[in-house]
Amino acid sequence: MPGRAGNAAILSYISAARVLLVSLSLWAASVKIPRAVDNLEQIMYN
Image 1 (cartoon, rainbow, N blue to C red):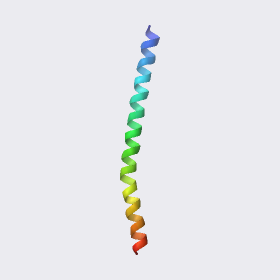
Image 2: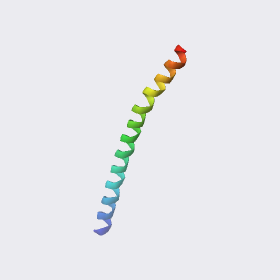
Image 3: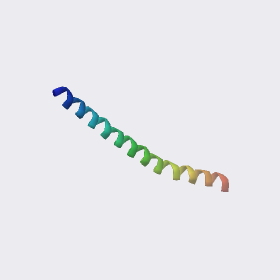
């Protein structure tokens, strides 16, 4: 029984970490992509 509880806790930690990683990567993409587009527009227009 303790082993099952430990596995469940580890799995819940892993799923929480995955959610954090996905949200962080989405946030980073939402921050970086507009900047890259702005840089490309500046390069094209200059």
